Length: 301
Ligand code: PMV
Image 1 (cartoon, rainbow, N blue to C red):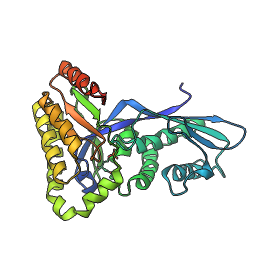
Image 2: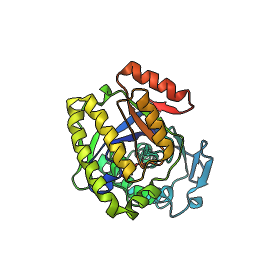
Image 3: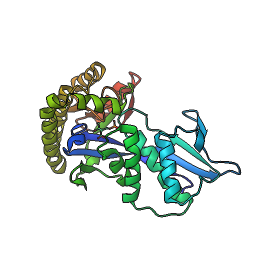
Image 4: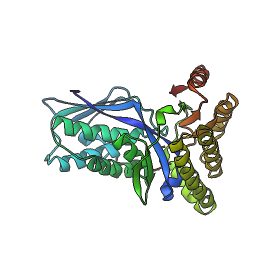
């Protein structure tokens, strides 16, 4: 058995932003990139460390309004700890932060799972999801819950704020999908706030994004690749209309389409972060991967 716990990244295929306003969205887990948490006893005090980010703090040195502090506080309650035990919590993450892949939710979920493993306590997935959602509110302000849900259950989901989530019964592995990191960081909370500022103007586009998600569910279930690509492109136009794309993303998406990608759209909050390309077949996906990597971009296939 592992002596650590982990949580994966996620990517939204359809419906980001609109999902905040009750429209459906589709997201899938990215099992291959993960955040890992590992607890070990020390004889001194609780300490959280991450060599990658340089984090090395006791519980009381963390920002008390921040997500990590609040998560550890909740875990103290859940585990009935009067104070955090003298443990070292070591974090390592392959998920880029502020890039639309759910790094915040993955961090929370990896930590919750690790406390459960280390202290031999069972929490249901529902409980884990609920705690992670509380912390998402600190990171994102007004989260839909799609990130924590996709990452907790680690399965493709159709998610809506009003009807919750259901498993998407589609063969996602048959999609030749590339997730490309634009290298531009963007804070979800800022983009979500801007969409809200112009909500009257944005609402018709948001409604249409919801319809695109519904059509996409059908296309995904029936494995209609050309239709999936077409809907990705339409979703991107709508995201541009609500002003969550940016010049650099538009150019990279255009380049991808010129290289034969059937569908291309941003994923997550936008204004940077990651984007998706749907390739014709596996060989084409490898070619696209090579092309983007030769420009110094990180590609997940
Ligand atoms: O950028 P991410 O990975 O945090 O995804 C955010 C998705 C939004 O729809 C923009 C916000 C939300 O809470 O659903």
